[in-house]
Image (tube, rainbow over all chains, first blue to last red; front, top):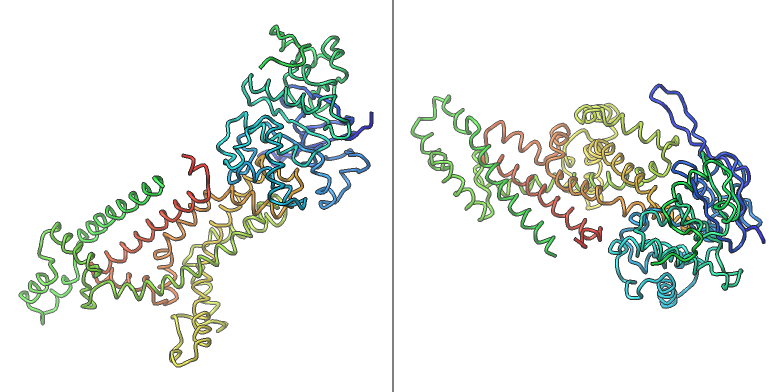
Length: 274
Length: 320
């Protein structure tokens, strides 16, 4: 399958200075190689501090890697100018963990969704309203919340709205950085089902986004993804199809994550009950 | 609207409390305008007693407060012993001059600090940010009086600007544009001192508030949508960072009458500063009370305006 987004030898280092003046380097990503094919469902799992979120923001070009390359189709994103990058950004969308800070508190639901259209398309106000309503319905939100302030929505509604906003510009890659972690179980299950619907095999490959789910929950990862990538200390320590990772984990980090999920949940089941 | 009504009631009660406290503290301070007259052998004890009775100074404190409240209701704010005139018209002329200076300098200070603070936040950690932070730190440690005297000295030595006052002698005969230019030249020094003095506080607050919101999820999500950086800063980060800045703006309004007193005295600006200083030294009781009350009125009004602006700017307050 055609590789859409890839990272090669990606390194990201953060520097901090001790009180004594000594500079300390923290390597959040260490020579990461990853390929995301068109329309794929990939889960990146790992414990806290393993570098999952850093990888997400680097892939979405919100942080510049210290070294290595990120390619999107024929473009090497790490070499592009700010203006060139801006035209590619809508193709790679990121949904953040915390739905409470995900929206401009001064914006209504309609303003949240239509802002990129106003700047990047020539759609009329009527068209924008229509498209926004379609998006709301697609993510399972009521049509009549268009005029409501984004601050008035519940956590689950906000996360759905965040996904709707990410889908607004028809991205080719949708990255969800722990986007389900702050939600309760029933809402998590609803949103997992929504992601499965968005990446349904029945949708033509040309319009189906590749979804990258970043989570520390191996059960959720196994239920959603076709391929799992396990990270530890900024490195990818194991990756492969779900059956291999869950059935025959090789690395200690994967085994540790699997041991944490031994709560009787059948991880082979695709659609969690709501 | 209940929120605004509550805030308004709060402001009115605060102002009523301010009248009591101001009157009480000023009236209870030792000595009065007529005490110095006792040393003058030409003024008899009977005359002094008659004068005190004329100005109600022989009455109990509660009665004097009520008489003053009645005078306040008539728009007089009491009577000046030194000027032998109601306080209001005396204060009005000086307050107008002070407001002319402080409104101009406050607007200028915000117009300079806002882009500087946002720019500094955007370039956080880079040389621009370090330069702005460094200059702010230097301005912060220079006391206002030293800044005022320093600029006054430069102005006197170079003769670039008039060293004091509000207008030149004979300027009333000049055409309107020339009079305006004369006023602007006189205002440049005191306004410059006020603007420079206000910069560190404003720039630092704006910088820290905007820097905090730049990292928020919604700004990063908007960036991922390809929204230009300028729009991200002015339409996303700045409005979301507005709450503490609106409170600071309310405080700026509150300080419009009282914030420039020192600068007015140093640069001989004919505002409330020199007038109140003179009234305090002469124990001109009702002028002092009137000046303090006017400052309190601006402070309360500034807070109320900030509340209204917050209500308008932040939908989360409206939701409550």
